[in-house]
Every structure is written in C-alpha cells, then in structure tokens.
Length: 55
Image (cartoon, rainbow, N blue to C red; front, side):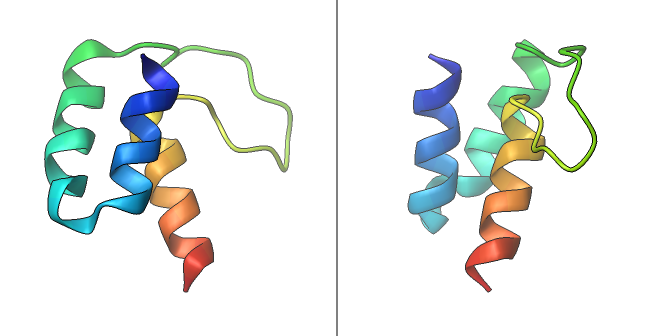
C-alpha cells in the first residue's frame, strides 16, 4: 500500500497533494531507520524527493 501511494504521488501531479496528505495521516514507515544518502520509505518524504529529482 505504501509503495502504491508513493507511486501515485510521484507520477500523477493532480493527485500528489492528496497522496501527501494521506501519507502524513497514515504515518506508515515514518520512523523507519534510513541510512545516510538514502530516501526514506515514508511516502511524503519519498514523493517529495522523487519529484524533486525529476526536475
């Protein structure tokens, strides 16, 4: 479910804000330990980072 939410937020700009809101509300993997220089699997962080990389 978390990956699906992230993919929707990354690839569908019209649904991005809603995906970020849902991710914040669910907090799935929010406290997941993430090594330095890696992207967190927390959907709002993941979406934001991947969209920024798309430029």
